[in-house]
Image (cartoon, rainbow, N blue to C red):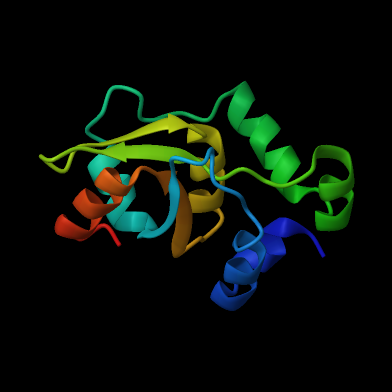
Length: 127
């Protein structure tokens, strides 16, 4: 089954994304509301406004058969983000992964972030 087919059902998406790993030992997995996070992130200068070559590469990667992808590349690392005390959101790594999942219907998705950012995400209703 292709990855984008799993995105159409939240339960399939959640099962798939539970296998994603966090960026490093200083980060935690936080499930964010995709639309709310995207709206907040759209105010930042690194917001991905247009699909580009990297977006297409991410799309190809995500559409690979799950088993084949894990064999070739290992675990799928989730995008990492930072949310400051003012509620400003920034994706530090993984903009194309986030956008590809968003554009294929992900309702919620895990992001890797520090505990402080996770606290701020809760404070501003992003989770």
